[in-house]
Image 1: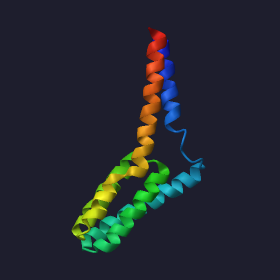
Image 2 (image 1 turned 180 degrees about the vertical axis):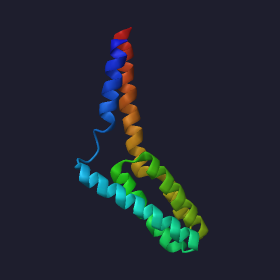
Image 3 (image 1 turned 135 degrees about the horizontal axis):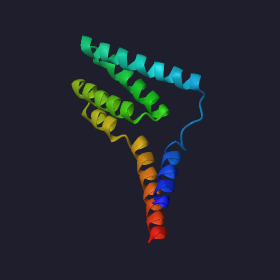
Length: 125
């Protein structure tokens, strides 16, 4: 049981290991910029200006990726994909959902966690 607790602590600390070091003010500013980009994008989409909506959702996706905000990454990728479809850009719509930049990082972290978990379980046995 003690190994499980140690593994969970290690897991929690490892999740943030690759994040860029930013101060609280920088994170707040980036979060504010993310919110503004999402709001502008939604406004453009609602008014039918899909070109600018796509540009703003792309910006929001970039900021969310920098912040490593998984919920915002997913939401903005989906919204960007929908807007790209409305513009008739099917390849760009698929590319928005590909997310290879952030999916590769997630896959790497899952592999590391799996390795740690296997080692913990081997030690416990």
